[in-house]
Length: 195
Image 1: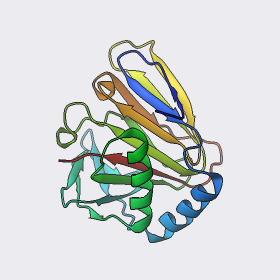
Image 2: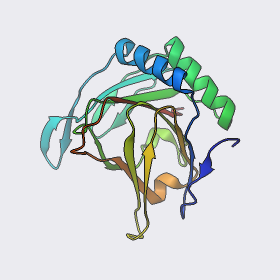
Image 3: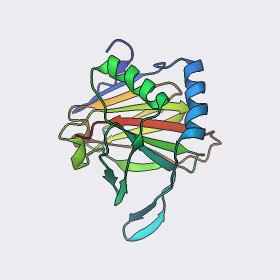
Image 4: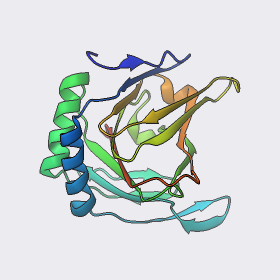
């Protein structure tokens, strides 16, 4: 990887590139994505209780393969011009061809994503996840599944790229926690490979 730095986490390969996209690119992508994306809010069931997922989501892809997590199955729209541009820039940086993008819209500090690993069967054994942020900065937490004292926090900035690969999803969980601080809207794109 040319830019960015390795978080140097045990049992993981996680890289962070703070200014992967310029400020101007980030603002332009944010504007088009917020208005042109087919956002949806699914019901999610946790421990037998059903409630609205605390963020909006959308799925885009180059194939018609659905993606399932937390008892939700999403079917992809075709990649837009902007998503294809973003995807191509990431692919030329890290040498992987992504088929699918799961987008998340965090409207305020109460929108969040709980502890999880991106380890769904359709992602393969050691998935590569490339995560891009546009809009407000948000805190990103990581914790080791088996060594409780191993934790890491990182602010995901607008225009940044975070890449998780190799055995990361086997050993680490991650989340975007809720915050009482006033935060503006954030859009997150997670590119992945569904064969």
